[in-house]
Length: 370
Image: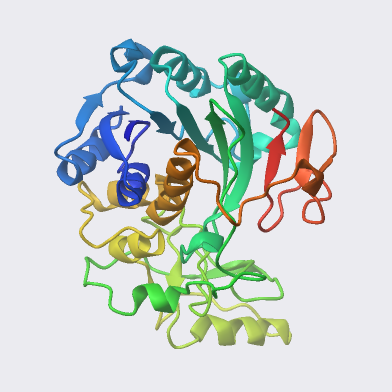
């Protein structure tokens, strides 16, 4: 079965779909650094190095079964101005245009959970209605990558369309109330290859922000936080490379410092000795990329490519479920009844007992009535 990867970046979706049995025939990406990485890893895939707005997708009509892609998330991210469709970086309409021009059997769009927030709910419903009008049954879900075997807590929204009947997201296999324990950072990094060290120093925050756990809050300057290696990592950001790169604290320096502050100690200053920041390869391991996947360009660009990617292991799970759906094989663990969902507002249906409000919680998954 053949796929087309839009906003392909470094190839996280392509890698995962390939592992699931998909043949990606073409990819579209504008970033030149990501394109070098993609071309090195997928030499057999046609790479269109262009702005998606200038691409005519009709030449793939009748030859592609699945259109996938993650349009830029900045218009909907809580870290930005959240201008939605008024942001010139909003490329969701171009993803929809590609789906209309290709007329695939199915599509899968990835973005941040902020697209489902009250602020952007009207726009999300408009997106879904337009895709329904293109003769698709549309399912929307927010999935946490850690629940699907990725050693990282990373919640992302997926909008999935299929022709025959509504797609069912795979049931989580890792973590609480699941058959398998989480894959931890320690598991992921146990034999990681050597990589160029991250030279960004770690300094104590002048005004630390305390939380009950040392992995939260802000003990050091910048957005990087110490990682609890006994569980999945915090989300790997695309802004890593400098002081927003997460920290390995093998000797418990920052853990002990957190306990000291919680007991009323005064903040320290200067460099934190005995800790270091993640390398690019360690970040890629936490994103579930195999070591054979090369990242090219300057170190900051390579961190950016890793952080922007869809974790391949999550993409593989979704890709396998999509193959099963298209071939008419229902997942034995999929959600099977609309009675399992409770309506909240605006035609949105949420998994009963999991999500009580529009706030995204762990393992929240919801459907739009189609």
